[in-house]
Image 1: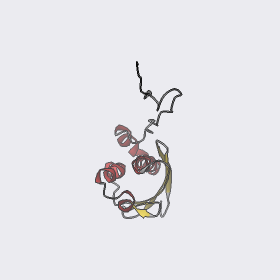
Image 2 (image 1 turned 90 degrees about the vertical axis):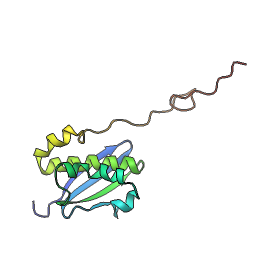
Image 3 (image 1 turned 30 degrees about the vertical axis):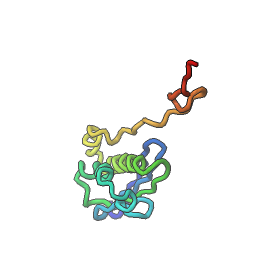
Image 4 (image 1 turned 90 degrees about the horizontal axis):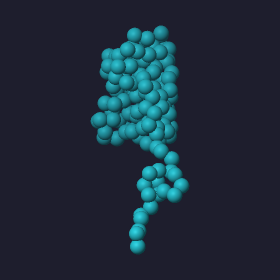
Length: 131
């Protein structure tokens, strides 16, 4: 596995993240920027992204390069986490149980509900006036 890159795709809401794992020092680059620059000052979201690497003890073993499109920053970070977890399983099948127990290999199926006719949004009704 010398200089071999492992690719995987992660999804969340309408976001898609194509993840490449390369041997390195534990840096994460999203769309050409470092993760810190990409998400701003949001340590909770940063922890969310690093979770699969921390669980499998690979924080300093891989560099992660990501191309993320669609959705917002948080949804993209969820997609990145999903992609990293899937790439780690490709690199070593033994990680599957650890990541499965944490729910990192399961794609989060929650998406925005469509708007219905006769309604203001998906479920909100227009204001009702009796008189």
